Amino acid sequence: MSVGQVRIRVPEKAKAGEVVTVRVLVTHPMETLQFKDNKPVMKQYNFIHRVEATYNGRKVFEAEMTQAVSQNPLIAFPVKVTEPGTVKVTFHETTGKTYTGEAQIRF
Image (cartoon, rainbow, N blue to C red; front, top):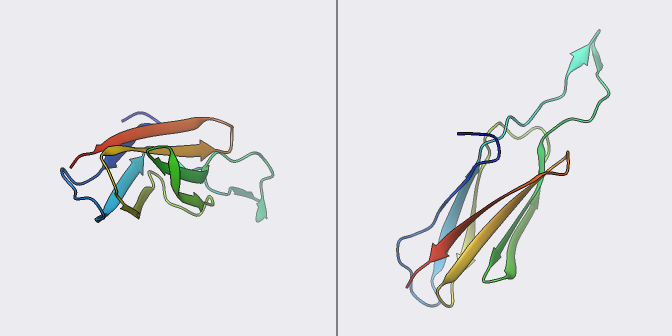
């Protein structure tokens, strides 16, 4: 898998009003704090710092992350589904890049 690849897992089928669990994995090295002479190296570290998710265009999840999160972070969150539609998850990197994945909720 290459950096920024997003994989989303949702149930094959859901029912109106059901709460489903969305699981998302992004491939990312999540650069950690470096030290030199027992002092932190001051530089722009590259890690995922924010995650946002929408369901049919409506925001359903948002989280702030730090570089303390392990590489290739796996995120899981509940969504109450009311109709078939699209779950879209976007990861924001400290360098300004974004990585997005989508999955379909089917009834």
